[in-house]
Amino acid sequence: MSSQLSTIKQTKDLLEKYGLSPKKSFGQNFLVRKEEVKNLINAGEIKKTDIVLEIGPGIGILTKELAKSARKVIAVEKDFQMAKILEEELSLLKIGNVEIVRKDILDYLKEDGLKLKEYKAAGNIPFYLTAHLIRLLLESPNPPKNMAFVLQKEVGQRIASLPPKMSLLSASVQFYASPRLCGYIKKSSFWPSPAVDAAIIKISPKPLDPNVNRDLFFKILKAGFSQPRKQIANNLSISLKADKIEINNWLLKNNIQPSQRAETLSIGDWINLTKTFND
Image (cartoon, rainbow, N blue to C red):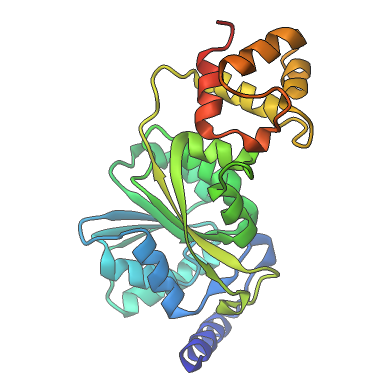
C-alpha cells in the first residue's frame, strides 16, 4: 500500500508540475499499483524482441515498464499535454526505445496503423472506447499478435463469456480471437479512482475460416441478438425477413432448437449458421 501511495503522490506531483489534472473526457484514470502494471505486461507475454503498441500512455507509468520488457514501444496519446510530459520524462530517464505519437488511437489505426506488422498491443484503455477499439484492432489488415488491456470488469467478463451467457460483444470478439480473463483490479488501484473495478484481459487473434462470409456472419449474429430475451427463431425470422418454418428447419439442421435464446449459442453455432444459410 505504501508503494501505491508513493506512486499516487508522484503522479499528482508530476501533473502539478505541469499545471495539469486528469481529464474525465479522455477517461484518464492512471493505474498506480505497480503489481498490476506487471500483471498486465505478463498477460501480454511481452518479450525483448517485441514491438508494442501502447494505447493511451498518459504520463508513462506503464510505458516505462513496457520499455524495459520490449524492443520498442509505440505510445499513442491523444492528449498533447500528456504526451509532452511523457516525452520529457522519458528523456530525463534516457529511455530511447519509445516512439511517442500525438494522435487519437482511432485515427492512428486507420492511417499509420496499416503499416504496423508483427506487433503486440497493450494499455490501460478508456472504458468508453473499449468495444470499438478492440473491434478496430481485430479487423485491421495487420492485427496484433495479441492484446493485453485493462478495461471495465463487466466488459471484460462479457467479452470472455461462454454459453449460456454469450452476448453480441462476446460473439463479435470471439469470431476473430480467443479472449482470456487474467485477473481483476480494484478501483482503488487507480488514481483518480473510477466508478467500477477493472479487469485484465488477453485477446489472441486466431486464423479466420476462409469459408465464412464475414458480412453475412455479422448480419445473422445481429439478427439473432436483436431481442436477446426472445427465442432465436423469432428474432431471425423478423430481422432477416424470412419464413418462420424455413428458419426453424435451418436451426434444427444445425442442432439448434428454435426456442433457444441467442445467448445459449456458441461461436461455432453462429459460424455453422452462416455456412448453411440458404442451403
